[in-house]
Length: 99
Image (cartoon, rainbow, N blue to C red; front, top):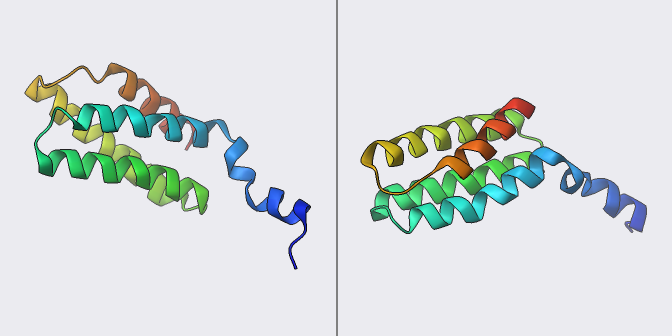
């Protein structure tokens, strides 16, 4: 049986700044995705969530790769002049600096 201390230890990632930044990225990317075509929007949403889940299961390489791909998609959104992405871009920079 798991103790409360075991549960807290298992969920340690929730206290990490990089995890909190990744979590804050999700609603920003969802908001950006509302202004994109379906394919781009789906890909952007998936990558943002994958950054969070990668950090949660300590798949740092996966989280980093997803963050880099998410940054590339934000570059696409910026190139299409669909919507401002500066806030999301700043979060990604913070996440990647920690990874």
